[in-house]
Length: 325
Image 1 (tube, rainbow, N blue to C red):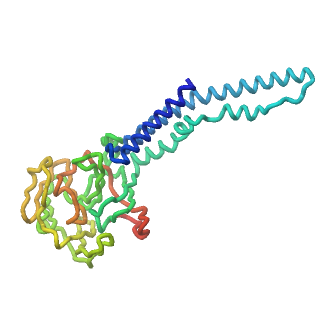
Image 2 (image 1 turned 60 degrees about the vertical axis):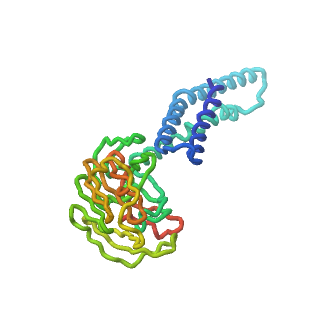
Image 3 (image 1 turned 135 degrees about the vertical axis):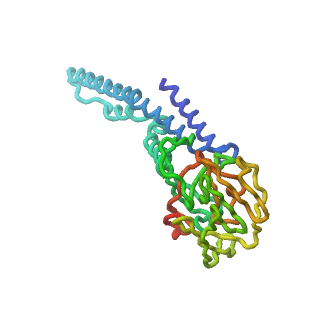
């Protein structure tokens, strides 16, 4: 069996490396949660096998070598020979040494299982890839997402097993992109179940009440090298900044044929939507440069990943570190 473990493990590791490579080059749509879960299961099996089978075998073999060495020394001593070639310690250490295929599986299990548990149930890191949440989140921000704020969910299938807080208007939330759930998106919650959300002439109204909006100094986008109109909007007790592009029209061009589209009315002024039960209406803070619920519809509760709460690093701007508004 031991002779088979090396090629079997090499094949298993090759599958993981091949999947990662295909994901990196865009050949397949990767699922990191699934990959991490499988890595935890596989290394866990090796860890159990090492603990209850392979390690006891090696330890027993080391004991037999020690016993044989002691018998041989006793026999030679009876013949008057006190010097014996070879080191029993070296032979014992060589037998007890973990082979490479266990070192790369069982040896990694404690680290992998800790990462799996932390990422699945506590906090998950994300990198902001686009400017849809400027000025709240910039491209390159590395953020932490609270995975249990909205309830504890099983990894991979994202099934909620323990309820907690419900998303509130103004929360910055990570969710599975409805048209393609393998992708994670981040936007701000502007409408909860039962709300009527209207975004007309670049003014956000919820249940017939325009959200308070105060003009701020223009925002300079260092990547685009241009200024944009900046405002502070307040939803409930949450105040945050947003951008508007005066050159962009108010109407929504190219909206998808999404589920519950009949709940939305599009016009030259924008859109009005009634949020269905169990769903949320999301918008980016960079209002004229965000592909959000205005285009692809509502986010179902089952797609929720967690609440963004902290920028822990931006290698291009260390001043970005801090809480997410």
